[in-house]
Image (cartoon, rainbow, N blue to C red; front, side, top):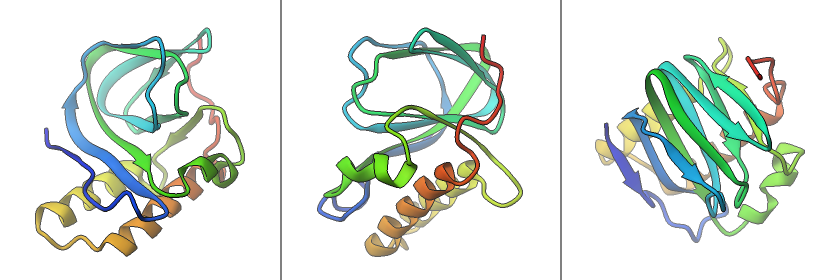
Length: 159
């Protein structure tokens, strides 16, 4: 369950403040939210997010991008393993423009794009010392764009 902080410079337009995978997810309570955009996605098992009075169940392949400072909590329902990424950079305040919303966004792996695979490949590049900062900054933009293209608020189990 590797996790790394600031793997490329935060002086780039978009960067990764943290990234990790195969995380055995524990209960998290964030009454003041997290200070950056935070993606959390189920890699196995099932988890539950409480955000803005809604309970959202995340099954394998499903994830949520939570905006900065938005109160939320999450917990495991069934052996929940996750991958995650948090985003910063010199244009991080423009992320709502990229997404087309300043609200939370649901996404899910598809045949066209896998958020899980993106995280795994980014970690592999970092761990093998083959990461390119400029390319990774562009890749973060592409990751966010995928959330704005048809993956926004996809139907998932919302109680």
